[in-house]
Structure formats: structure tokens, C-alpha cells
Length: 398
Image 1: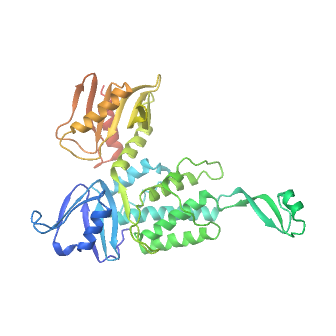
Image 2: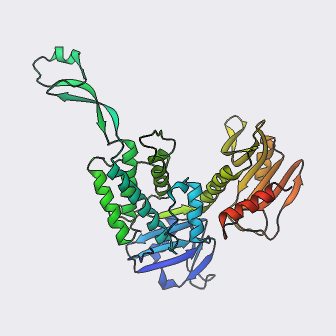
């Protein structure tokens, strides 16, 4: 279900690759906008003698779509096959129960990838609307012509002539955060302008259905994490995980106005780390326990934050520190080695592993003092589960 965007001019890059464009292909003002507002995602070198009077653009570790003007947009394509991008997403955002891969593997573009996910979310929210939205009791205070809940006796005595009395009561309502997150996410998707007309129509339909009972309130990706679920709203857990994906990968728009198309940008370094962490949690031997993003204090107001730490389950002793590196150098950099060794020293851990998405020309296996430093591959260019099993075999050699 790929889509053909309406933009008349789309330039395309591939992550971590450099491409040249002729002087007339990119308007100078558009180049300035790209340079000023998206330098995290793209290196921009303006036309000059060194570039042969061409634009030189180098994509960094991000993929997605950046609308720069109504007529001009930039697409950054992944090196990873689109089907593996879906697979990474399943693990990273805990979406395996969605089983959304079936029938969605035909898409070959970032717009198709985004549109498919939006369709899944809208369809699942519509299913919940048909079942009935989750409701909860919320405390309310209001001036009423009748007594409801608890009466404010003090005010009633002070103003006996007032025909309306102040009451404290609880209202059973669907206008709660659980549903407001869904509405806000659909609102964001609608403003990105990346979906096919068919999916956009479905998103609008579901959004208007929610609007009947849910007010539009802004939410962040963090609001989708750590929510409380019960037997009445357990299905919201997966909906909120998918909402988190959309909200997490929305970048601020640099234009004003309600009709602005929003950029969709996915940080592949972050996704790779999340994917490896969640895959390992499901596939590690039982005598190991994994901790993610653990803070290691090294002094007053000083700390490290590690990607992943593997502990021996029996005594919770740190055994391996794992650090994902979503890049393809010929060999690990001195800076990366120094970083993970510092982690290991502060954690009293005997071994560190640098994890790359593809094999290095010069792999690493050496001792730095008493700490073993290795580089391993968790490949993304083939079957992800098979690649994971190869990674585990190399991590725990017999």
C-alpha cells in the first residue's frame, strides 16, 4: 500500500550516504532551512568551488520525511530493508501482539511504512470505539441547581439566596488521558500529510468519532509509558505503545499555522538500541538478566548511562556491558573503546561488547587492563531472529 505524495519535488537520500545535487535542484532558501533546522539529520554543504558548484548532502543516522515547503520535501531512506524496519519496531515498541506484519510487507517506501502503521493504529482504535471507550470516574466541582454528590455546606450557608449550590461529585467519563492520547496521536498523524488518501480518510473518520466524547489535549511520548492497565483497558497498552512511536518521532515544525505538514523522523541509533534490548529480553538464557539505560554514579552529580548491562541472575553480578553502535566503521574508534572501558571500570564489570549492525573490516577482541573488549554484530540485513541467535552464539562462545 505505497503512496505517491503530492509534492512535485522530492529529493532522496540514504542514511550515512553522501549525494550531490545540481545548483538549480535546491532553492537557496530551502537549503538554508535544511541547514538551520535539520543539521542533526543532514549535513549540508552549500554549492562552492570544492563541490563543483553542487549541493552536497550527507544523511546521518535518521530516516523519514522532511517537508521543507508545500512543493519541496526531503526523504531519507533506510539502509535496512523495510520489512526489517517493521521487525525492529515490533520488538522496540513491544508491538508483536499486533501481528501487523501480515499483509503489510509490500510497502517499499518510508511513506508506505508510515501509512501502514497509521492504518493499523486507526483501525485498532476504531475497533475499541465500537466496543466502547474505556471510562473512569473523575472528581468534578460545579454550581448545580440540584444536589449531586457532596454539597459545599459552607457556601450554601453563606449564600442562601443562590439557587445554584456548589457540589463535589464524580463523573463517569471517557474524556480521560487514556483516550486523549489516542485523539492527540491521530491529530498529529493527520497534520503530517504522509498517509495515502485511503488511510487519511480512515484517520479522519476515527478522529471525529473520538471527538464526540474526547477533548483534544497535547501529549508527549513519555505520557504513553508507565500507565496503569486493568482487565477493562488492557488492550490500550498496545495502542499506547504505537502512539508512543508516532509521538516520539514527531519533530517540532518550524512553520506556523494549523495546516503545516509535520516532519516524520526516526532516529535509527535509538531504534537499534531499543530493538537489541527488547530482543535480548525475550531470548536471553534464564541465568542472565538485562538492564537498560542504567545510571552508574561516579561522583557527586556525575554519572554514566549505559545502553545495556547483563547481570548473572543468581547473584546480580554484572557480567557484560553492551553498547550499541548504529554505524559502519572499518574498526571501533578509540573514543568508543575508551567510553565502554570507563563504563566497565565504574561498574566493576569484566567484559564489554560493542555491537554493530554489520560486520566490521577489523573486528576487536583485546584486553584493556583486566577488561576484555570485543566487537560483535547483530545484523539487520537478513532475518532478525536468525541474526540474533548468531549474535548470542558469539556472545556466549562454548
